[in-house]
Amino acid sequence: AYTFSNLLWFFGVHPSAIMNVFSPAISICLLGNLEAFMAGTPVAELPNLAFVTIYAAMSLGGSGNLIGLAISMLTAKSERYKSLVKISAVPCLFNISEPMMFGVPVVLNPIFFLPMILATPICSFVAWGLCELGLSNAMNPAVMAPWVMPKFISGFMMGGFGLMLIVLICIVISTLLYYPFFKIADHEALKEEAKLQEAE
Image (cartoon, rainbow, N blue to C red):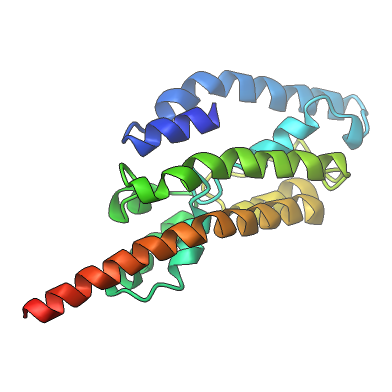
């Protein structure tokens, strides 16, 4: 569902159109964990522990795990991206991706199509694997953080250092995915700026 919503978002359709349909499934999983936890089920045996762990590792910086692009933009050499990162990085930290989606832009930009589509499923599988290794075993289903809280902080609040580590690892993966594509975009922007300077 998240990957499909990212695909639509790439074409300019806001992910809320898909995620509002998927929200009941998320709520059922969260409630199932809470009921099991309140009944005394050990955290490692919660029925939807992997689901919640994966959920925590998605939408890092907004849909498409754009936090990786924001971090990549900190290495920008072009004036275009140096300026854009100043206005889009902070919203991205709080999982608001619209300034980046339309400012970079990511929407309809073929350079960013692959990382936009691949970041979520790759980070999800990594989070799943780390959950299976026991890094989510401090999860407290009774704690829910608002979606605008930076994910590494909400991860710590909901699952201690283990879940925070999962989120940080996924942020690194997202950055590694976006970085080479951003360098291509940055190089193109540098060439455009050089042409403008020559024209002046």
